[in-house]
Image (cartoon, rainbow, N blue to C red; front, side, top):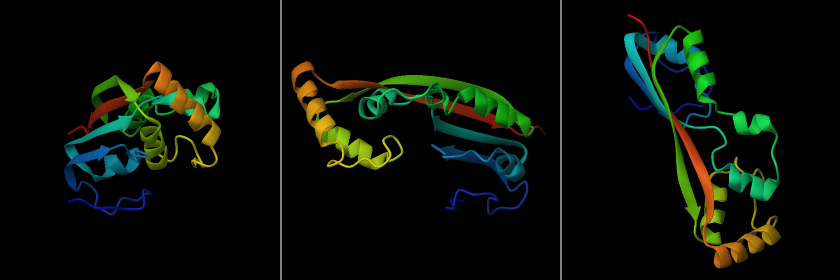
Amino acid sequence: AVVSDDDEPPLPFADAAFDLVVSRHPVHAWWTEIARVLRPGGCYFSQEVGPASVFELVEYFLGPQPPEGRAARDPERARAAAEAVGLDVVDLRTASLRTEFHDIGAVVYFLRKVIWMVPGFTVDGYRDRLAALHRRIETEGPFVATTTRFLIEAVKPS
């Protein structure tokens, strides 16, 4: 079943309803709810945004960010939260991927789609920084950032 909800507990399912729960880029992994809806032996599988993803772009527009901003979405925190509700983490892996912005239009598109990266982003509000970045891309080549992701697989003990 594919169900859209308001991303607030409780999930609209019975206890032990599923053998598999999958998620991609959850804002919050509601671990108590995930454990509740999994059957014994059931698996949760998720690909999530990792720590400091595309942070080079964030800091270009917002300046240096506090260390806790870089540590958000820590895969080890996800492991601890899953284990705290009784799930066994059987796989946890991370990836760092090179991301290149070849023109300012791609930067604007990205920031308008991923609205939490630079809160309140508008072209008018960041016109000077955008123009400077445009010139930089034209003279030095693509703006390079690092996208991070992690994959977590957790199983409810039988």
